[in-house]
Image (tube, rainbow, N blue to C red):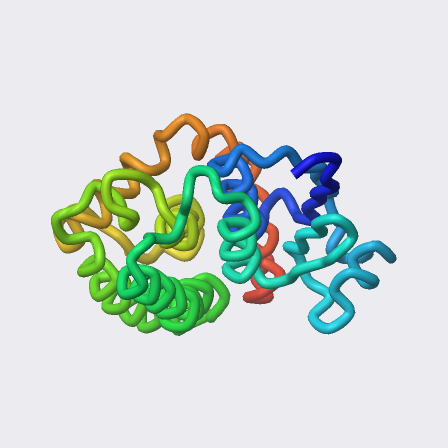
Length: 222
């Protein structure tokens, strides 16, 4: 598409904005990145996402889209090169199913383990149970997308970074090689792919940022 305008409104420490960055990079789409100050949301963000007032927001030729998984699907349809979703209708539906499962069943429990004071171990146990179920979608494949990175890899991949941050800060166990060998091997492989690794923020900066966030959420002064 000639003379296109592609803009991404995001936040450096957001795993959901990272999803969209990964999709754009894998599809080799040139875009302008706009960093948002979430405590003081810009008029641009409020204009382009008046319903949820959240990042990420993709603006393509002046038309805004919100919600990271929907954005990734749009990117895959708008730019045909390097497809992210499978061609087979069943496999496409299956990828969407597991992405929805991850967002609805895994993410709330991981975030709960991070933010719930006194319930960390219980929420982490539920997260482990659901992540173990998600691991089934990997059986016999190096990536969720098969031989190459696909839609579900992008949707789930951030857990390899933020999950470890939750483990360190909250003192819980989410993913380990003994109980989830396939998921662990996949994460180690996925996060080392150059185009994926290049988008990941500094571990030290993420850790320090989330330590502060954790104190706010739990009311901790230590």
